[in-house]
Length: 223
Image (cartoon, rainbow, N blue to C red; front, side, top):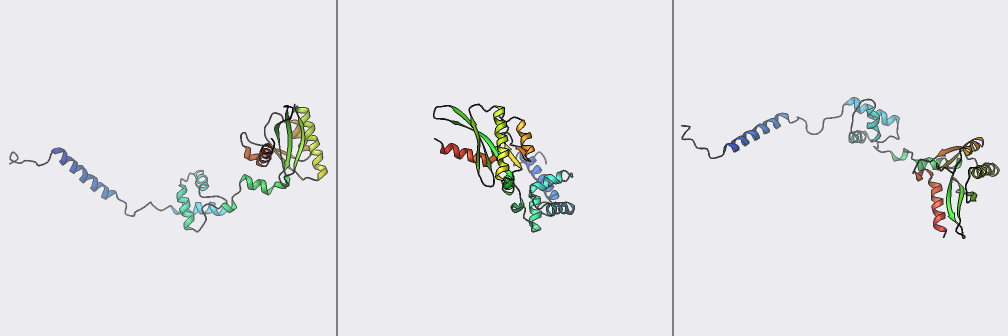
């Protein structure tokens, strides 16, 4: 009987049918009863809501990082969905604080200073030391020199400290970069006057944006 049986397909086709049949059966058996992602555990939801309510300025991207310190792993999208379901804004911009907002809120007690280079009509290079008040945008030229030595800069800072007292400026902080032209002694002079020096980060002009904007304006207007 077997000798008279003739297959109309090749053996490879029969094996492929068998593999597909096993695959479909396995897929049906392993299919979850409830479609979609599994719901977030109630304990994790409570932790997310507690962190957000106690820290209103935190957005949905920061919460996963804070929970990771507690060995709780959760995706930012899951936090976003959880907050949306509870009627909480996932990214509360109104309560966030950035560097620009910090500068505006404390403008009355902040100064900024910097060196800028200029060329005279005779072709000589001059270094100008200037300071600007954040609140009034009033610029004070502390001096110009072709050779900004430590003694010259120190004397210019002393004059500035005395001048601030005369005009009644209530400066508590001065922002400057890490230029080697500034001697370490000037920080002590400013500290005696009640002014704390805040050093700008390396290659971070936005940390001294008020001064940088004035310098750029000066360069554009100067031929």
